[in-house]
Amino acid sequence: MGVLKIISFALLLFQAIHAGNDCPSQLCGDNPFVVRFPFLLEGQQLQNCGYPGFDLSCTSQKPQVVVLNLPNSGDFWVRNINYFMQEIQLYDPNGCLPRRLLSLNLSSSPFMAGYSQNFTFLSCPTDSVRTRLAIINCLSNSTVSVLATSSMNLARAMNMCSIINTLPIPVLWPQDDDWLSSNLDEDLLLTWNVPSCGGCEARGGVCGFENSTTDQILCFSNRESVKAGPLVLLIVAIALAAPAATCSIGLIFYLCMESRRPRRESSNRAAQNSTIEAAQPGTSPAAGLDDSSIETYRKIVLGESRRLPGPNGVTCPICLADYHPNDTIRCIPECEHCFHSDCIDEWLRMQNTCPVCRNSPSPNRDNT
Ligand SMILES: *[C@@H]1O[C@H](CO)[C@@H](O)[C@H](O)[C@H]1NC(C)=O
Ligand SMILES: *[C@@H]1O[C@H](CO)[C@@H](O)[C@H](O)[C@H]1NC(C)=O
Ligand SMILES: *[C@@H]1O[C@H](CO)[C@@H](O)[C@H](O)[C@H]1NC(C)=O
Ligand SMILES: *[C@@H]1O[C@H](CO)[C@@H](O)[C@H](O)[C@H]1NC(C)=O
Image: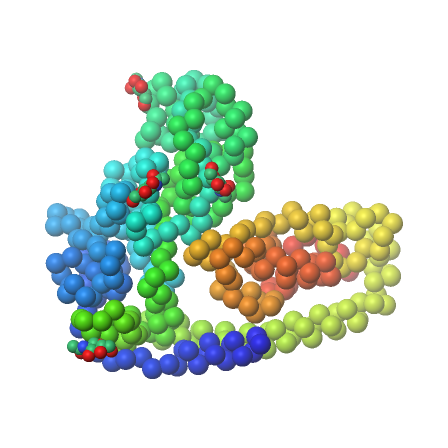
């Protein structure tokens, strides 16, 4: 099944790309990114060059900026657009993103958060806030300090503060350190699912409407895009390498299990003095981890955008099935490689290495 999936993905790469499309890319001032389908630069492109809800404008005064108006949430300035990943990076014209996050409502826009995490905004007397907590300066003054935390425990413990609101905030990466507050000063990264043009972009194409009277979307060739060549080659290489890698993982796994059998007894003795997290005292310190160690590795439930943190693709490298919204994945802390948690848990019980990079996730690895 996995091989079929890869073959069909490889075929997808070579699907016809249609020639011609009357919607040239546009630039706005010195901004480093182009504006093209599904986005539309108002006044500079034909109306059917953009998808509904993706209208942008280019300010006339210098330095020119690209502006996205989100219904109910107002204007944001655009730092960048990643057409392949289907991501748009936004910031606040007034340099106070937390203020905008407090009133962000994405429900009538095509955009959504890759991840969101509940944050509680607290308003505290300035002289009571300990210095290790990050303060949102643009919402604070000499008497009142505002901070945001993802920890309900911290919010409750700060009883000298009043709670402004608890609401889901789009974050780049779920915060592990539950006890610290955040000043939420990173850009706002939003994603979109529809129209889905990442695959077309990967093949060096650009999506567009078939013609001005239909909402049918086609993948057009993009003559400006010379840079797409290496990307396509890379994806083909990955598509070809993946089955080989999968086979070799299986083979190596099998060979390791076989060849370790006689050696395990001797390495057990060598390892006896060092604590092996994975093994209970008295039991055989096998190469795998126990469930409580596995449980310490971060688990994430995927959102609608199915965006994974770190260097991860759209397919679980162990079972070769694509990730879906609400899938539970688990990531290995050192290398940030992620997998379906069912798949990796099974693997880690037998083997304390990352199936992708072969690094050991355990600090107390068996060095023999
Ligand atoms: C967001 O806006 C919609 C209307 O567009 C409204 O129905 C909804 O209640 C708002 N959500 C929040 C959390 O304010
Ligand atoms: C965030 O809070 C809402 C309502 O308070 C809750 O339904 C939701 O499960 C929370 N999400 C997370 C990820 O904790
Ligand atoms: C600080 O901000 C709070 C609320 O935002 C306001 O009530 C207070 O008057 C402000 N204090 C000063 C000194 O500006
Ligand atoms: C637009 O595309 C639709 C669907 O393919 C087709 O039926 C229609 O004739 C086209 N219209 C024009 C003006 O080319």
